[in-house]
Image 1: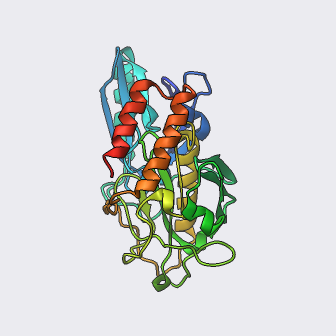
Image 2: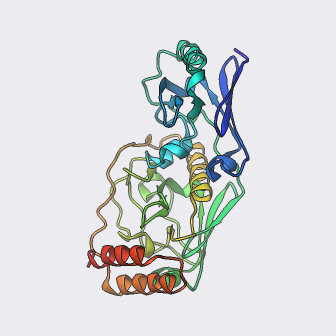
Length: 325
């Protein structure tokens, strides 16, 4: 097609075999879009195209990716709010006819296998090296390995005892991401079990206390079907995870990071590894250790005293924590 359709926060360029989505760098553009900059989406990565009325005199053109085609959407597992969906192009309502034309053009280019899950990622992941600050540590990814370096101000005793962690992607089976918009957001790595031909990774001096099993649902993208392996139920006790918090693990940093790790894990999986299992359930979190609850309430109180949390937020989050006892 070779045409360009400019919308709010993004521009779509239509090529013979793909759509190039370029995001604006303006102050009102969501930071996730600014972080992504641009994404080339092959027609083979799409399952359908929709055009619906938007808010305040707009229409929304949306390309819906195939399951398993985009590492970013795979790892986000439906947790993105509408305003952060990189496949939505918001246009003024007066451009509805033009948007309908491009929607029809795209639909005509979608292949017959569009309803089937993709057997590999078709959209490129964000590029390493990458890093971000979580509440309890710093996460780094150089393209080959993921490292967690704990902060003494936030890391649990279990993580301090385990020591800083380094995980080669060849020893991982997947990634689990829970949005920082949720109170208990986190990024958890899923180590590959011994039955997959690789040891469960841990700190440089020895194995980690607890390995990850196959979990999914909101915030999960598993890379291989594994039998259940014992591991800490809570991310703040798991040395294979970092937890988010107010101002830590921001969406525009932690989600591209998780997508890049997942893409590398899938690409480096051994040929005999089982395919991903989308939609599996998260393991039950169970009740927290009372000492851990007290520590989280103490930290919440510090944020409240510093003016970073309102009275209403403090009361609501404190009640939420106490309800888990």
